Image (cartoon, rainbow over all chains, first blue to last red; front, side, top):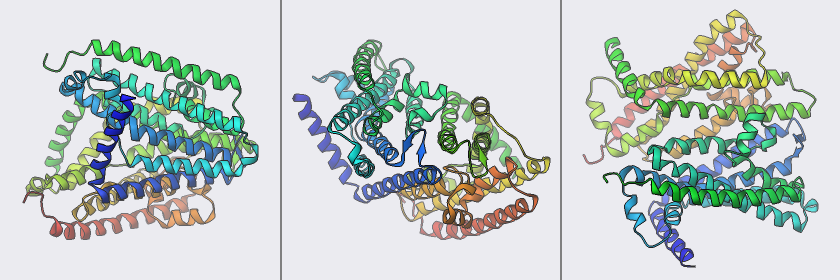
Length: 261
Length: 264
């Protein structure tokens, strides 16, 4: 509860900060619209040649693309801004100031900063998901919608834990901004279902860097491609990943010595 | 001028060798992108029984590997850094130096490409093995590919500078940059080989400069053009380069007059 209130305060300060640069804010929104529109165009070009792609129909693919932008948007909105700052804190030794605050260090490090304009991306993603779902509305049951929401939440947990683990590496390697580039590069691959990729890439996107499953599995739920076992697996994996990342964070924290200590 | 370039190159190499891992990682992952659309087209081809238009699965692989090479060699980034320099007023000392700022950018790009090509090779081999490659290019394709690539790189570079020069008037170039990046995403041959863009889009693609930056050199490299077509393409590329050069000169001169350094 206290954490929710803190989250509210952090969010408000970031919003005020962002609103100080209104033209910039609008320009960023315009850029987002441009990005989503061109991605849609790319999907339409592909589907101009075939009604299905590896068993995915166009509406199902739209849902997947929408989920991609929701996941990417929430990552940009809530996760990456904080992790970027965190790495800076480790490098400069200013992490000390965060560690002495009376709240969970993992919470303060990972959910302190927000990029408000990314809300636009989440909204656009929801719109694309909606556009896809409307076309296949009669095949979607209430159970599908519930498993979609569950799978999407698990996907977000996976993304969060991945970023937390990557960032924690900063305790040993200090300069790990590049690892966020890894995240971004693989994230881009999630715009298509993982099953279209050749073996090594598919395996990477489903295990070590689970960005692929984070986007594909929720879309599968709507496309009627997700068995109960699959849903159970992603829930179990998300919980396991969360526990591991939290443990890894505490483990890494013990190695932190401060920059001048 | 040559001596200046040699000194800049040496300094650039020394600078870049500090960040070997950064460069390596960056390249390794920036080449993932063409593989994404390659996989998508392979899925579409498989759904149609093995081919799309004149493209078989191996043709797609060849196309996207050729495109990765072209993108890597012909792409340049300037707008972001230039915006930063103008916004922070750091451009002023550069303007006082005897060498035009554009030369520093040329060298930076050269060094970057020479450095990163090392990382590119294993990725291309991996992709080649995964999808299978099929080379149909004649020797003259490779010969004419060289000027086509150079013209493409020059066009992209000049175009990037025209956009960057808009920083003289608007201090946030990144949104302008995003706009053109996304147009390029559609029309330069990244989401699809230009010959597979549906009807009107294809016409638009050949009427804009972006196809001549990457798509055209790629088609020449993989041997998909006739000799006459290649010559026409080279001519159009050259025309675009001249146009972009003249435009940049005009924009640069007008921009310098509008430029008031921050803090001046």
